Length: 303
Image 1 (tube, one colour):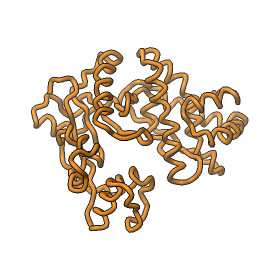
Image 2 (cartoon, one colour; image 1 turned 180 degrees about the vertical axis):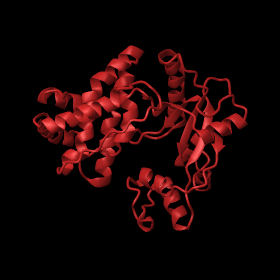
Image 3 (spheres, rainbow, N blue to C red; image 1 turned 45 degrees about the horizontal axis):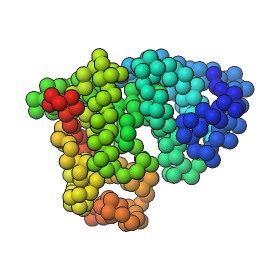
Image 4 (cartoon, helix red, strand yellow; image 1 turned 135 degrees about the horizontal axis):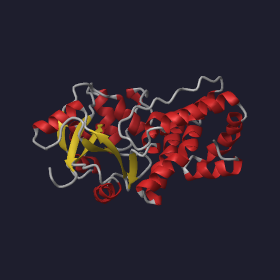
């Protein structure tokens, strides 16, 4: 189910896996291919991942590897995604997904591993559950942003229905995500991504009408405006969105994780090198809380 040694290294490089992790991953792959129990576990995992490839919202529960080797346990999802790659690429070809979009989308595996190394200082996959969306054909990288084929949840859908948008719970939508390690979130970059998305989805997923783009992120917390200048990228990003609903529960670890790389860092010692770092840390040190904002914007011109 896995490529041989030379091909595996090339596949990992195509997926933007950090170079310093390639040798260890190739070496550990031999343990997987030589162990019938691990191969069986790999086959079950791949089947769970791709059996409903392309369908939106189907629950996928990748089992955790109960194995005494820490590195192999942390890296086993890499082998699952590599083994699933032929199915993912076949689905992309079936939908006519351009090769560059496919490549940049699936390269999020490498970004995820870079996030893990930044936080823990060792090889591993930070959030395998997140990459499920990429390898099942639900999410696509289009320029600076990622767009996930999804359906409106009960609360957001109800809020949009009450606003007269013409959608409601379970209506098709695109969830917008902002990946790390991809440069600043400039207005021009956001404009380009939205333009690419408006071209991409009607062509490759014509059966679904996406009327709205939603974003659920701490970047939409209006309190950031107290700390950042009006012309900052984050404030200008916020101005694009209409608020779908308020979030009553604080999520203080969200900005700490995405700004500083580790949600468990002590608030007292958070750096103050940039305006965003100062905003996040100073607000928490003053006893404030951060909240995930739930926003939406029209996608097809009808809302």
